[in-house]
Image (cartoon, rainbow, N blue to C red; front, side, top):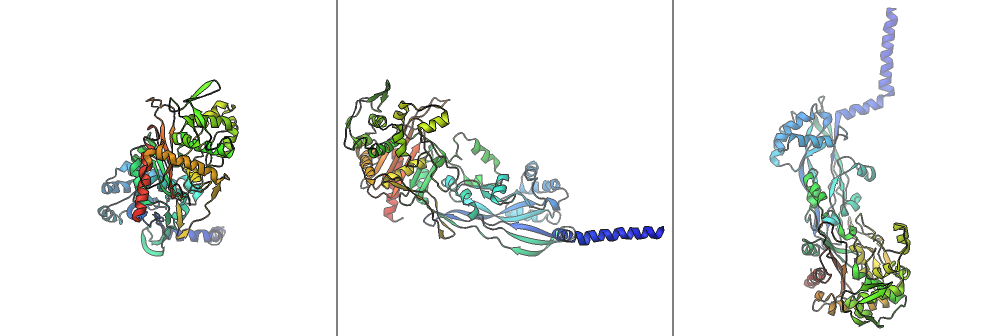
Length: 572
């Protein structure tokens, strides 16, 4: 019996050895190797970003960060209590940062402090014998040289969210683009991480470097932005709410784009500056809102140009035909007023554009009807995304009977056509859409897809679309004649610059009063391009709740045009 028990005992041991070494051999071998080594990821620097003239916009700066590996720690809270006195960060804050990443793999380093000084690094290194779970790393930190002036274009980075991890092939703790070009071109900018494989002793302490693979920096982006122009536009718009866009009509390259107010992209990219982030997110002026592509506004009298194109295209009227403006237009038992009480008298197309005569366009709207207006205007970039290469662009609304029935469930009324003819009613558009509309006029019937990036890793980008309206160039020539008169002697005459032929159109968009202040001041808008014969740039400016278009938007656009052509003449 005793011999049988001994045989059974050793039989069980042999079976267990067979299970561990043969059936599960590869599993436990890998586990043993894993316990004997520690793999530390080396973060790849993100690609640098430049303006069109080779000026650096975004770079990476080496900073020291402190991480903790929970798998090597008996008591993370005790470790952080010691560290708290060195980095001068309260223990509850450090514990909160650790708890926030509780779902991380235990072997993955969790950053609990960043931007350490050399003194702090030296003191922490002295604790390494006592606390092998702490690690000081040199990290490439994103640094924006013009953090407010370029914030809405370039955006910022932040730790990957659960959605990012699912959709972008990244890991917990990785920094990814959250907005702007950083988000749109993240896969190019991110680069390839490297790693260090360290051998550990029986106590788990790293003792020797076994293998190292260096990271690869992300691709360099060259943008269409002209930094000097961007900074000028930013300063000119800084204390106002609104947006300004400068675009090349030939290529669709955005030379400058500003949304105001702005934010500091360096502070938004910090892992731990939650106070600033909360302040920006709660700001009622919405600094994170990219007004140039997300702001949707009534565009007022600028839309009269589109109605004029439709009237000429449908042969409703000739450019020299005159219409009498007594100061009002009676339609459906209601008087629709012109902006000047006494009226403009007899006006043709050129004078109607020059003086922005409401009555002329009321009558054009009545003669055309909503279907003819929509048929022609739908060839312009209203009511749809332009395809610009930054995310979260809005579509705006080009209203029609079909749209109203679907969106509101009610029919279209003839009086709404009259309001639409002067850019009021349901019509809303983004500043970028209006700028592209100006580009279509400047190009006499076509416009390019707007974009920022012109080179990736030294290779020219391509595939940008061109949209052709199918409208005869001669029609746009007639519109341009009227736009010349706007600046020469019309509502935009304060935009005049000696020696430069400018075409423009003012806009004053009526809006609903603010609830608290009952403020009813309209948006001020101005669309311009120059020179009229062969335009080099198109400029659009909108200033929210400021007053008439000629008062605020026109002087800003004039200054932008003057700066651009002065710099060009200097050879910059």
